[in-house]
Image (cartoon, rainbow, N blue to C red; front, top):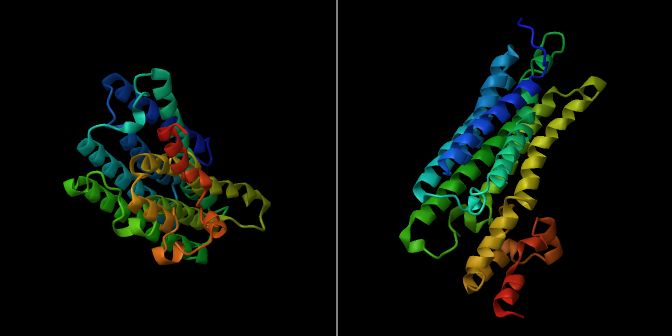
Length: 306
């Protein structure tokens, strides 16, 4: 065995993550383009998955499965986002930011924190500390392994299909000026986010297979819940749904068909419109229909000056 000072490889993973983001930040700042932004994020997940797997030096079935899950997800995300930005040409998220070096640098710092924190469950599964013969873990195939794998497969398929459906919708000239309500987007306003959250909860569920609740030395490993929680908090409250909902309200808020769509389609959890539209508002709030997602009245008042 090769002696590794960082027994869980968390420090080296953090260093690699920061190094990758600095490298891509320099390219983006010097060239002043957006082509590498999401590529850097997705590729970073792939690098961490492969690196932590190789450093584990045990290569258990669970490690192979989780490494493939994160690598496949990261590669798809990087490839899709790169292709999309090449087709679109520019990323509107950076309007007014790319011109300011400090603001632009903050985005890349945030992306490094995002990559590392969301990767935490995978890094713990691939830790050589927990796979050693002196600290045995259950063979792959526990109930948590099976449930987590199913969650990941379903979540990955939902996210990939939703992204593809929206991309095709946007690329069709006949849909100019229309909001996307095709396919999965008629079941939830953010199917890709639902799939993303579900698959990371799936990876964390798999990680719980190596946690022995009777062993106090294992209690700290519940920190892996950070992976899906960070994903969920970012998408629900920060960079995801609030911004997209506000943008859609700005563009389509005056359209009667958009009003019907927003009132009858779940914000996150897929369900038939006929079911969701009949739910009372308190129940909708429990299904993540938060008031901050509806800015139609504020926008209307601003436009009318009332």
